[in-house]
Image (cartoon, rainbow over all chains, first blue to last red; front, side, top):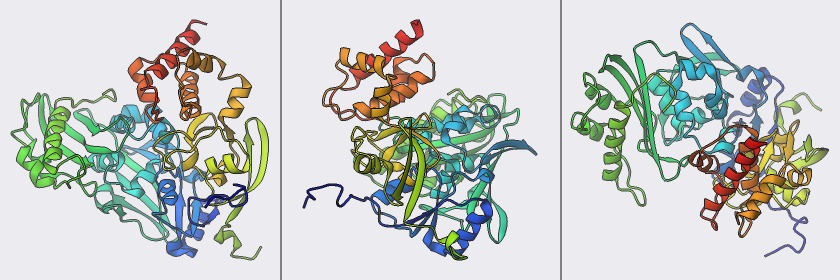
Length: 299
Length: 167
């Protein structure tokens, strides 16, 4: 069925919704609390718009928070780098403060989507969407970040590892927004690592991990390792983190943590990739990350 | 406007933006994405639509000088911003060197990806950096081409980058 004049009946991919651009954070809070579960915040829209186009989600109201100054900016205070929820992936790559104090984020950001996606996608959006294949939730947990949330009822702060509850599921309550994220800055003995396997650079991760470690010379004194792409949500891989403690780099093989990977990860079979293969890739990537732990943003 | 109107939002929004260098004021459907708006309302059909969920890059436009997916942006979101499409940029002459290199190296075959490729390459050149071939490939990795195998496109972008570095 084709309309003879395409303008007579313009095609619409998404279901009908209303749109509003709040003038202030307080205005956004009032809109969100008034519309309860019907309202969804829109920032960069790089995940949300895809789900709207495919009609996987059908909110009644989109609240465009992308211009709210209260949610932007970066600042250094009390041993933390605070990044506003609207920080773009592109800004993670370009920020001098990020490069110096939380280089893991700069390393991870180069793997998020492609240039055009990184130009619009936001830090808060990535955390709120909680895609199990996303880089930033894993980094936030590995770094022990604290997520600042706000609503009409007030502000609260949640540790990243308590924020991710399940597949695409977070601790966000109705009417609540992510305001900013506080990342503890790297200390002298800290080192970090990041690796990801995707079909094409920038595609969704098949398997990836973010690691933050405390080093005693070449020995790993303590580690926080978080996987993505092969888990249901960003959470600390406790067995692997414990298993790599005390190892001296370079680590010759995966023997010390192979069984820990099997107890931390239970990947699904996906087309073209068996669960066993994912576990193998996880072991290979883990060793690579341990052997490339460093304090700099350069990969 | 009643007391609660400023909390409800509307299914049509008036946008004011700059499109291809000219001021634009329009009433748009809240649910219409930017690429559909450009093609259906503005008849700017050089912005192509492939996958419509952010994978293929055919709908690439520039928002405030940087590439964005037309299918992952609502028309309503461009209010207050500057948007450039392949039509505006080509007419402005800003793409001339890139277009010449694309033609010289057969970097466009069916042409479906070309508008997106050219805009992405334009952002790359506007950074004024010298990139390796591997880096060029990564930069254009968000734009799919099903004809050329990318080699000719990388050649063309590299040639334009080198020419710019020399001048």
